[in-house]
Amino acid sequence: LGVHILSVLIGAWREEREFALSMSLALTPVIFSCAHMALVVTKIAPGDIYVQESVLILCLIFAFVLARRFSLTFTKLEQTELQLREANISLEEKVIARTRTISEQKAEIERRNLVLEDELRLAGQIQKSLLPVSPPQSGPVRLAFLYEPMLEVGGDFIDFYMDEERQRLGVFI
Image 1 (cartoon, rainbow, N blue to C red):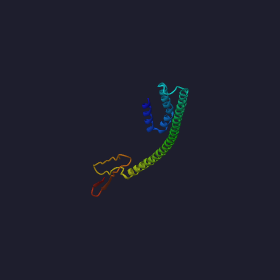
Image 2 (spheres, helix red, strand yellow):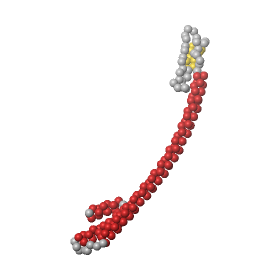
Image 3 (cartoon, helix red, strand yellow):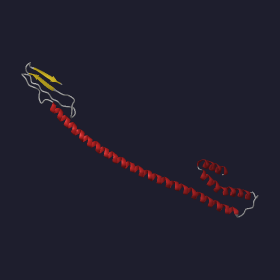
Image 4 (cartoon, rainbow, N blue to C red):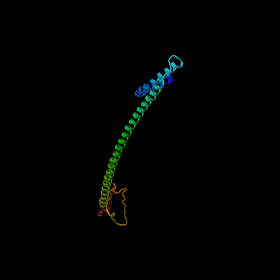
């Protein structure tokens, strides 16, 4: 039992010195009580009332140590809970602010998109106004063309030049 208690104290000392110190203080009466009982059993020391009082003192010291230990644990738990609440509040505020920023950016993008769509529609109308309505017709040959841009505005251009004197037709693409 003594070796086990000693190994627990050494392990606790490495991990948490305050707890190990409290346990050492609490176990001191136990060790003296055990030693006294061994002396009483071997009839080296007389049995007396102090043994019973040492058990009472032992119980009081253990109660104090455990109360102190629980008090420290609950204090740390409350501090951790408070830090967690503060972190959650901070995180919620950041999420709300970021959501607001994203909504504002989305609205701005949608507004710009509408402006670009209007500008592209206008550019398509200007481009169509620059194209000939129909190719020139001359003689037995009939010409036609269809201009369909892939998007609102295309990169191609077409025009015709008719030389009536020499009866030649020029096509510019």
